[in-house]
Amino acid sequence: MTREDDDMTVPAEAPESGAAGEASPLGALSQLIQEALDKGASYQRLADRAIDPETGATVSKPYLQRVVKNPPVNPPLPPEIGAIAAALGKPVRLIKEAVARQWLLYEATELAGYDAEVRIIVGHLAGKSPEELRMWRYMIEAEERARRESGQ
Image 1: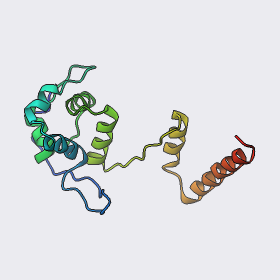
Image 2: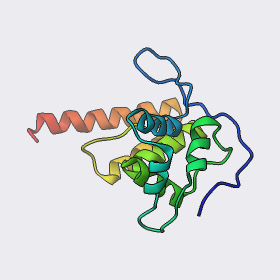
Image 3: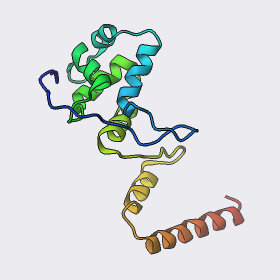
């Protein structure tokens, strides 16, 4: 499966990032591919490794070039995401996050040290009003305080 026939393209820029607050001229996925190129990879070498281990889907050298130079309107599909992850030697999760930032302007913060239930709660809170968020924050802080005071 390739996306070579997707000829409708628009530039996709990532939201501002970096310590200096400067916006990258490349979208998040485009930037990951460019970083691999900057480290000595070639588009052809990346394309040769771009095989999704689950589906066998591939992405071509021209597709990878297009993602960097003139990103397609539509984001890569899940099998293509797996192929790009294999090409870059990166976790699929990281590629999905880059795709979400580049095409959906979606930012997510990784929660380390928590289980899936905490991630669900955080996702659920994303659409709450400021008042509802304040109530949840107070409940979470009260639980943390009780845990500390009880020595847990």
